[in-house]
Length: 195
Image (cartoon, rainbow, N blue to C red; front, side, top):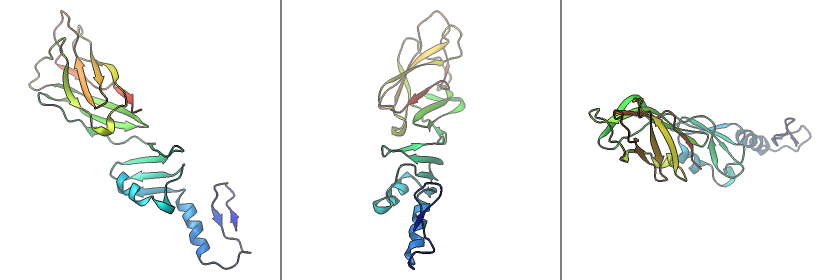
C-alpha cells in the first residue's frame, strides 16, 4: 500500500499488494471523508456521522435544509463557512415589518440583522420607555448581553439603544428629547458574535 502524493493520508493500493477486494473500498472511505458530504439537515448529519464514520477536523458538509456549508473544527464543533439563509423575524404583538423584510442570518458564528420595523399602525415609539419588539430564536441568542445603537428616521432622535439579551429578547429605548418621536427603526447595523 501507498499513500497519496498530496499528503492527505489517503490509502492507495499498489501493484505489489496481495489481492484484497476490500482495499479499494477502504481507499474510497478515505476519499469520501475528505470531500463535501451532503445531508438533508444538521440532525441528519448528526445521525449519520457516528462510530467509525464520526466527523473529523477538516471535514466539510453541505446541509440542504439550512442551505449552508459547515466545517468540522479541531475543538469538535461545526462552524458555518458560508452565510446561512436570511430567516424572517417574528415581531411581538403591536410591532410589524416596515421595509427590507426584517430577518436574521448566521455567518461564521455571528448573527446579522436587517430590515426596518414600526409599531402596528405606524404610531411613534414612546420615548424614554423600554419596549420589546421581538425575540430572536434560540439559534441566534448570544452567550452574553449585546448593546447597539440603531438608526431611526428622526434627525433629533437619530439613534435608539438596542439590547440583545441572552434569551434573545431585543429591548429598545428611544432617547427622550425635544424632537419628534421616531416611528420606525432599522436593524441593519446590528451584528454580534454568538460566543
